[in-house]
Amino acid sequence: RVTDVMDATSDAPGADDDASGVALVMELARVMAKRRPAATIVFAAVAGEEQGLYGSRYAATQFKAAGVDVQGMFTNDIIGSSRADDGTRDPYTVRLFTEGVPTSETPAQANTRRSVGGENDSATRQLARFVSDVGDNEATGMNVRVVYRRDRYLRGGDHIPFLEQGYPAARFTEPAEDFAHQHQDVRVEDGKQYGDLPEFCDFDYIARVTRVNGAVLWTLAQAPGTPREARIVTSNLTNDTELKWALGTEPDLAGYEVVWRETTESEWTHVIKAGLTTTHTVDLSKDNVFFGVRAVNRDGKRSPVAFPLPGN
Image (tube, rainbow, N blue to C red; front, side, top):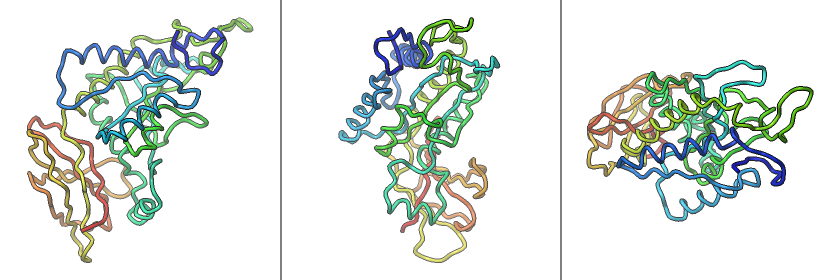
């Protein structure tokens, strides 16, 4: 049986929490096994989530110890139903929980963040913007509702150990939960059926969430990597902005784009083509707006944005 409960002896089918996520992973692995992505995609079902995130923590620490460049990690936990506990349905929305201030942030990094105002520009928030750009469209039939929070109140998931290791990671979850069908013994009480049973799952909804994941994973694997060593030059007081970054090694790399937005905006609103270079100067004050840098390949696929830090 697949179950996501603490009690290992009770009848707990775990159809939504989290056989739905396991089914998504297995289907995407089946589909993508016939294709060759430009980067490695790892599909995994881990154990011991309720007992202390044991499986995901082991995986994250193993990746970190091996120096693996994880561009993004997604956990699909409770993605099996579009029905809320009041009976209403929202079959075309999936939530994506994304932290702002990084879990792995050091005191020195916190001081830099406070000085430049990067609370909404962690690597995970940039990953969330990438997901919205790629996975929220007519092809998937879904609206990705990005939630600026690491997870729900009093809850957690398998993305957290990856966040602890400094990797961008986020959680997909259905739009509103029905708690009568989570963490409940299977029983009928006052004429109401309790328990996480298959009949309460929406299989068309699971298929659409799978499409979102598939679009995001495939595009992320085919796109260039997030630019490294992105920084804003702060050696002189000027009213323009000089940005620098390291040149990527992808054979199909076509160039870079500088993006910017007002500090009160949550999404990137302006794009400037910088070309195949490692520096670009913009006639805008770094004091007034937020900047980012992303890579573009010859097919027009774009990386997640790198948020530049002050430097030389």
